[in-house]
Length: 380
Image (cartoon, rainbow, N blue to C red):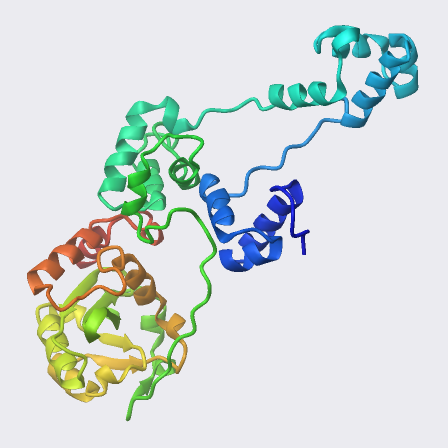
């Protein structure tokens, strides 16, 4: 552990990034470096949670130790040639170094090293700061709740050669999170799905397993479902809110098309009834199967299958990754339905509007087509 006293040294900063990249909480990092959590938070916020690049020194550049030797040589009255022979450098190198840092009388190794580091910064402006038209497009799409990766993919898809008016998602994230660059407004962070103030590793969250009587295991699904070749095979789950409120989410495995379903409570009879009503609104060719988690809210799956002619498969206990398409979509939906907020007051029309908005956002896995475009292409 680093010493309990002292400033934010290079060792402390390196330790912060080492632990941060491992997903260590800020409180634990603060204890490790013996600093208040607010200090760690402020440091990470300034850098946007993105580790700054490590600076390197070219071999032909003078080192800090060599500058100390030059300073001592000048103090003892040694000539440039003598100092150069001692360091294995030419006399002209020593002369230029001393000349640009105040001359023989004013030369100080510390000040010379400080000026060298300052001159070597060579700051490269962010692309979005030098391209106002591109910055305007990015801001407009961020305000429409598009993710940086969706924006980057969409721009590349609509660019004539894949380069003009394009920007990487990493550049957008850095422009948002790194305060020093000051390219994008800080309030635009609120349009990101996670609404985080800076980037960090998300800790793993263990799933809560459950049991369903007379269920058909996901391991019995045919290859037609596994390869995602045809639409009509769905994954579903509930996203929960305050006061036991919830919304049912159903996502097509092939096109990522999303359907939201309002439910009054989590009882099996209620969930099944509302799901049947929503799925019956889809064309028959899109009602083939449904994969669900082990939640007891779909314990009446036999009634659902009879009413919709859809086979229901259930994941293994504690294996939400087996319906990863729905898990990912639920993460996207948290942008519209934050955790610990009530979901009971949303009408079905409002949920349909949110689904339409999500279905009109481009997805990387679809080649940055929208789910609506992908579904329309498969149906026609």
